[in-house]
Image 1 (tube, one colour):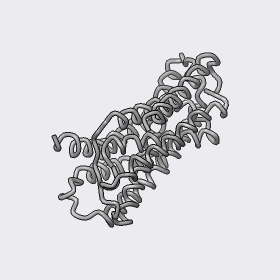
Image 2 (cartoon, helix red, strand yellow):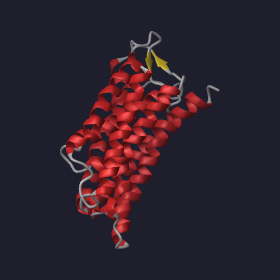
Image 3 (cartoon, one colour):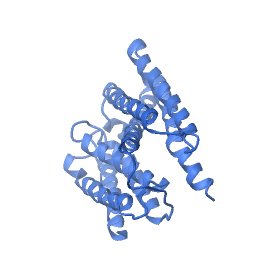
Image 4 (cartoon, one colour):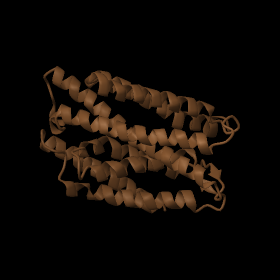
Length: 267
């Protein structure tokens, strides 16, 4: 398994390097021809196989430990990015996303921390866990998009766009893609919160109060952002600031609470 993991990490980093090299060699043009993403797609397939064995092939139960979920989120973000890149001009995000995914896989590979839940988990709770991870992954891509939009907007205002900035789609296209991602992520997050209310019992006993409160705060901020976009035409830096604030709340909800419960309180 370690050999396959090492190969997967190399493929992720190799794809990111190809994108970065194309960026510097041909500034102002798309980061890569679509077939250059093939090593990344192979890495995603191998990573999915690794995760399947990490999560499901344990007699103690499903492994949903901190680093396993970190790796799973990284895998979903990479999968969504690479498949969407064939339809939308967002392949440049791979320069940031793919090294992050490689790091997530490496941390899972070297960690011996696990958190097992029974194989016979209620189907409703399984749905809630799955949809929550998907919501976080979708909004993670939106966050990377928001960061790029902020940098792009700053460079254009200063009238000194570099090669990386010139390779990105026009600002209006970037904004449209950002709000599409946030809108989709917001819908999935809404389903996640609703399923949590229906299927999760005894929040206090499961140390889920902080996670729930922070997730609701993030949901409200995303709702205000989308409402401001629809009603007042929010764009540019104000939209990015709201998106970043919401994502920080969501990151604290998903990984902050999990880090404290599994890695701090257990030691």
